[in-house]
Length: 329
Image (cartoon, rainbow, N blue to C red; front, side, top):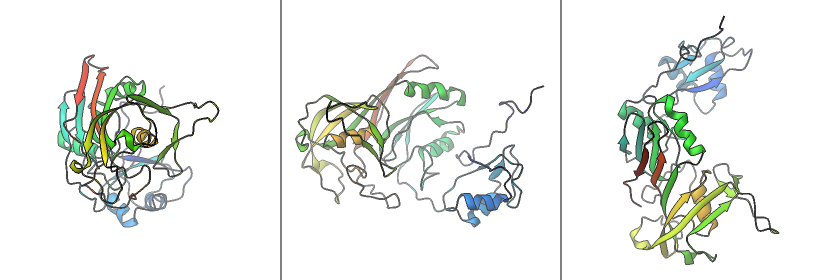
């Protein structure tokens, strides 16, 4: 006898308004009701908001039964719930789909838009907008770029293909090209000769939302590295033609750079350029934090970083995929 349900028969929570459910585990032998457990677990969400979600049928148990606020959780393993933001701010721009077939969707993401729901954005996230606009509830990103970065994001249309595409990124079988604007090479105190390859060991900073490089060993001038980027300086620019944050000091002479990350650490390109003494124009995190998470974005001064091109061999169709962003810095 086979116990339990097969994966094909297991309950699959629906996508509501383009948003899939989150899951929270229930402690064993809890005596709390559903409403008391959720308000204690997620103190940032008001009891009134949780009651609204119960009333909307957006709290379910593992088999899909819609829960009531006073329901016991003693026999429950986990709950499904749907994230929402009260008075979510609206971004003043939309993403553009540049390619779509039965397997992939490729979109040009504007600056300031998160790929997936997070922080103060849910409905405004790229994933939720695309799910609703294209009526593709199983759509899923196969890689991520920072909210502050603009450019290409690739999505898997079918759930059964998702791991194959993600494996390309894990195995570094995808060639990614970025454009960036920073100070001209002479703005750095280092003697830089381009093109160059920058390698370092990156770790999470004491400020969890930032990354930092570990110092190289003084004796050997080497360290084990987990991040690597090929960088070239291609064009000198005038600062008068760029949208620049007026609250920051920037070099008078700027340049356009091509960056090809060979690894995929969080904030890798921003950290590497900062380590070279050439922080990206309008970077709010490197070298210093200049705007907190709760402060309003300055849409007139976006980070000068663009995911410009991506190339890979499609693991499902076997064809070569080459995409280029239509956005410009």
